[in-house]
Image (cartoon, rainbow, N blue to C red; front, side, top):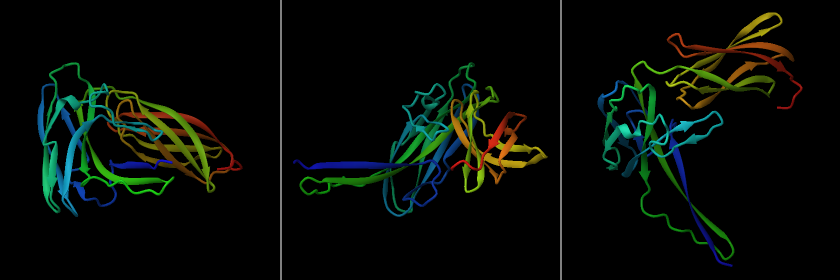
Length: 271
């Protein structure tokens, strides 16, 4: 039997890094600009080396995300609301010394198109280039050898809002109750169906037979047009029965969306 040798590359996309890496994007992972058609804006993405010398490559993708956990980093310009073609940057590769600093300069050139409305965005990827070539591991006869190479990369979101234009609209796409450890959690999938990004702060006013039981926070999440997110609202320990829930998504600036649900809690159900 022939040996089967496999090389796997594991890629960690660091949208919200929580631990230390050899490469740090010190200028932050979101560039947000309010622009008008015809505007030109220049800025920099600041990089910092940590433990060792690193070669870093820079490239573009589009970016979409969904409530079920999917993230799509598509070809630049594949999303109708992509601004990837508006963005030029330099360089596309950097050698970053340990403890050193470097900058990627970008320019956003907004098309002089009066039909532009709402939010447009894309991603500039900053990715470590692995040192050398991973050697193929040896394998005994009839066995499989697997090599793993971990590559980390940062996704810097470049977001442009065309003035104050664009419709604001949210859809409460799905809901369900989850029972665990004697507590009830209301899970809400919320989709942005408008033209401008929204950052809704969600809370639930819960009512029982005796009146309002309380207000329960669900957090605050950013949603781009066409994307969706999942909120988890901890309602605590509830007795079996029916409840009325008023769900509020407050996006600020008088942009408030709501939905009413009747919830039936059955604590005898298995988690």
